[in-house]
Length: 151
Image (cartoon, rainbow, N blue to C red):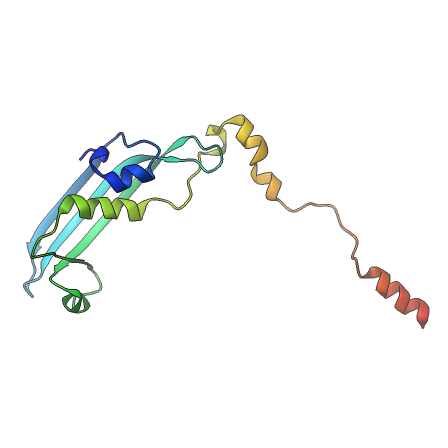
C-alpha cells in the first residue's frame, strides 16, 4: 500500500513517499472468533529532532488481532489478541493499518550523529548535556567553617 493513501499518517511524516507491506492471514478459531495474524513493514521519513531534516525509520509490526462486535466481547478475548471493534460487522483494513503504523511511530527520532547537519551537531551535541568533571565548591562549606570557628 502506498503511504500517501493514509491521510493521518501522512500528516505525521516528513514525507509520505514509500510503501507499507502488509501481510495478514484470517481465520476463525475453535471458539468461533474472527482472528487475523500477520505483519506490517515500512520505512518512513520522520523529522530528526536534532537537525529538523528527514530521517528514515524502519517500522516492523507484528499483529495478532481479534475482531469483536463490541467492548463486552473484547473483554472475553484472550490476552494474545488485540481487540478491533467492528462497526456494523465490518472493519476498514486500510484504517486499521494506518492506526497500527501511527502507533508504531517513534515519539522522537534522530539521525545517527554522523548523519545530522554539522551546524545542528554543534548546538545539539550530546556532550553538552554531560556533567562537568570539575569539582565545584560546596556552597554550605562557609557554614561549616563558621561552626568550627564558633567552637
